[in-house]
Image 1 (cartoon, rainbow, N blue to C red):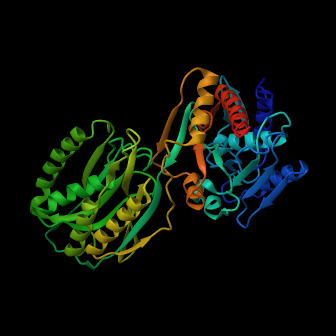
Image 2 (cartoon, helix red, strand yellow; image 1 turned 90 degrees about the vertical axis):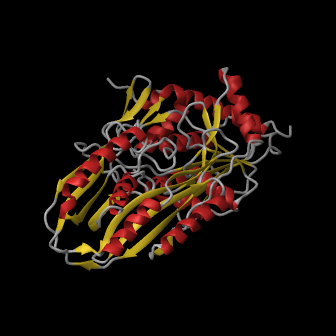
Length: 488
């Protein structure tokens, strides 16, 4: 018989998480969990507020005698990513998450678990409910729609962020804490194209790149992985130096925050170069395999395609190829403060046809330094304008520059070392966090992000380590106690 997770230790946290799992809370549809949290806060006679986008803040007075301690803000997001296995029947808007225990892991039956960020939410509710945990003045901020677009963090008021220190509870590695993240902005270019009827001496073929690892355009950008669009463009660029290359169709990539794994194009070349391009493809494939030794599944295929009624005019075809090949891609600059951390990067994310006469190219820029993020955005715009494209940018989000002299960092790391006998890893990530938006609105906030071990996030393989939650809870309570002792 499977043990109910509410019987796990620490019970006060797991019981809260079990309750959260019973309440549907997909991104953008958090009404039910919001109603529960608001009712929960009011049932404890705690000051509870909501804002126009659905964020919630609950205030809790200090343990008597610790009123002069720094104000500590705890923060988690209440939405979850909703993914399920193909054969799993589950309605995320109405059905509870079905949890089970497998050794040291809590898992869900065929769906995402929602430990990201449900464990953080559960721990905040458990702290609000407890009469035994020592703490100074507390604020608990519950944000909405983090997974889709940081919506809650973008709209939270600076008044709600009026605190001395902030603990973000959305990290997912035991003994590894985050003190910085990159900001980001997306840049899109629209290319107008002219089509024409192909000449009779042209031969049509389809070229595809596949089998690349891809990955997150922040976390994985420094791991030497191939970008399928740029590898395809590089090959086409090399060929157009020898003979005309007309594009009939080209596409690749999908999400702005993913390194493209696949790309393909149908092109037309003079018939007499039919065998030459096959030879060149074999040579090029061998070069890429040598340049990218970790891309074990990389494939590049060439096959004859049917005759097409229209192709993109040669000047426009060359304009697209030149641009895709020339776009900066990958790490632009590494951090000078944290070893092996990218500071600034860009990702050629996708190209797709959006109308009969238009192609859209999307890129994503990241940097932990705001000025360099803007500089890179402007460089991308300049390149696209030179290519004759029209350019748009997303609103973007700010980064969170690491503060190596942070007081909350010292408290958190010293507490962990004292409790568990070894020092934690403190680092920054090259991806977006809500903390970047908080820092932009409240520059005095001293922040760090912590959490237990959660693997397989955003997939039905998501699992949360029971033993690491126990460590995390002890650590979190000790942090609250240490902050409360300040000014005593």
